[in-house]
Length: 567
Image 1 (tube, rainbow, N blue to C red):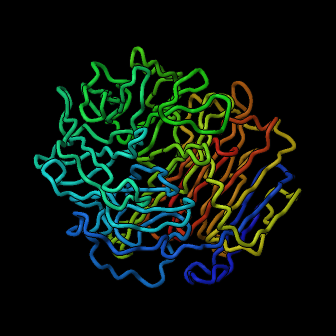
Image 2: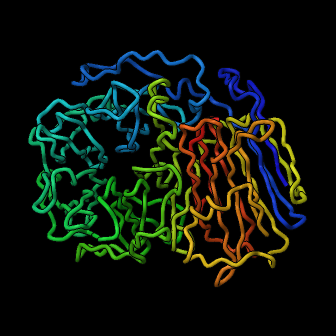
Image 3: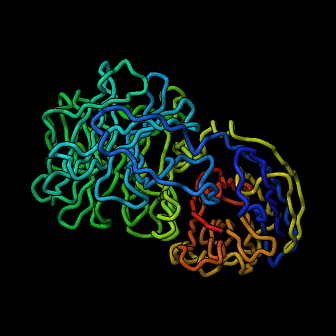
């Protein structure tokens, strides 16, 4: 069975993408078995952004020498996203210091003002929003101007000090190309846009400690106020063949002392980039402030390495300044990840307005450097995700923020559609290159599922070897997106069901191997298991499709896979 979403041109009147107008997105299903009932809800999205945000003139804030070079972008760019965050031009990577202040959401991010590739000099660009969907691009916040950051202002975080307002901690690449930690403060706390930042006169406030090389000490987290009234922060590091969360403590947020031992370290990872550390409620989807510590929370420790963001759930013991994970990193595919596709250098913040924790992640390109230079831009941010602890306590759950409903346009719904194996069903009436698609699959019988030992396989390799064209007993079934009429180009997001050692296994795959006929594009297939029992719960899929990015949420957000495609 195949469910087809046919693309229609000009559903968004302000944007036209003629290169994709002949495409369709397809929800497909192909089994050796006969029938399956499918409940499908398909939602089209209107794009209400102007070039993913409105750009304003830069102010004289010390960054005047780092303003973006003029780049003439092509008038029609079929691969540029419409409802994901990206600057008007040039290179973007890590999200930095997201926060809410005086009624305004702020997002800082790594940016090369001079071109579409990662640069020798990186800065903190700055954008603001009232709803996390529509953005205004402001003047740059932090630029290399001092000996302690003269070669780049790299990633960091924002912390709001009670009664004093926000403070930025960031990594500077100093005159000796050493990574040091610096502080910056708002020039005007009454300004909700926080347009100007002043660097602390006594920077740097932290330098690489003994045993840590100058290029393995970066990316400070949001700080938290501990039980003894002191502030704590961790820096990503690598020392003695161990990736680690280097812990620093301070009474005044100015003078920092390194703790004797890391908060956590392991020999099973590489250098820790962009670490994150925060509490999650054990009995609610609500978020909690980073400094909350009580019996009602567990703590998440996240680290970036091997081009993915991995995390652990565990217990923070402040009296010992130790983090005790429920399950350590193993260095295998069994380790927990935020996203099993293209998603890295992520950062969360607590949204006190709606009592939720929000996750941002950098999604890089899959085409070539030459393509990026021709486009004039590279990289975008994921849709902001609400993140919380699953009821099982074993993993996190992610879901697109509710504000995305503001972009919904025409809605197409199908209910209780019974489909035969191998058939194709086409759903018309939405723009398949800009869509929010939700499908629920109900399988009447599972007895014929093939046996699989999950500890003996890598799910990504399993998805690669048994791609969407390979029929199994129970699968593949799912969506084919951004497909041509003859299906020579298509990106498949699909499921397979296996019988495991202790019940059934649900495998989720994102397969761009036939997404384009071009050879120079990375077409890596991604995959992961979903922790659900298909005997008790239907299998759900939500995919956000935005021209060259597909973010997919399986099992109500228990497994997420993001991919970039260029049909």
